[in-house]
Image (tube, helix red, strand yellow):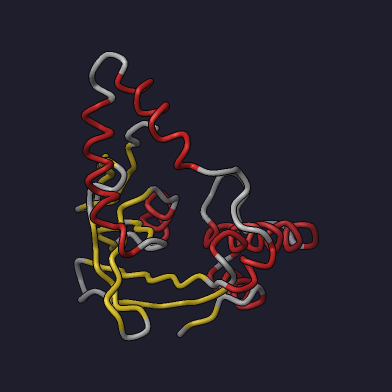
Length: 186
C-alpha cells in the first residue's frame, strides 16, 4: 500500500493532491454522507468540454462512515512511505485487510446500486448539483464500456483518438447510453 497522488482541476489548472486528503459531505436520499478524494478521468475531460468550469474534483463515498479514518490512513501511509522500509512494512501490515481480488459476486452486485453526485461550479454561475443512480459501482464501468463498444461497432466516434466520452459520442448520445444501462436521474 502506498500513498497515491491524484489530479484535480482547481482554479482552471491541474493540481496534485494525495488520495483521501479531502473529505466532502453530500446529501444522498435525505442523509448527509461523507466521501473521500479519489482519482477520476473527469478532471481531464470535463474542462475541455466545458471551459468555464473552475473546479472538477472526484470523491468516492462507498464507505461514508470510514471517510475520516481513510483520510487519516492516507496521511499515515504518505508519511510512512518516506522512510526506509516504510513501504515494505505497510505492504505486510495491510495485505491481510485487502481481501481476495475480483470484488463482490453477481448476487451481491445485483443487490446494490451506485449513487453518483456531480457538482459543477463555474466562474459565471452558482454550483449545480445532479444525482444519478444505476448499476452497482462494480458493474457500472463494465456496463458503460460494453455500451460504448457496441455503439462504436456500428457508429464511428465524433472525434477519433483519446478523447472524453462527450467528445467521442456527443452529449445527447452519451446521456441516452447512460439511460440504456440504467443510470437515471434521482
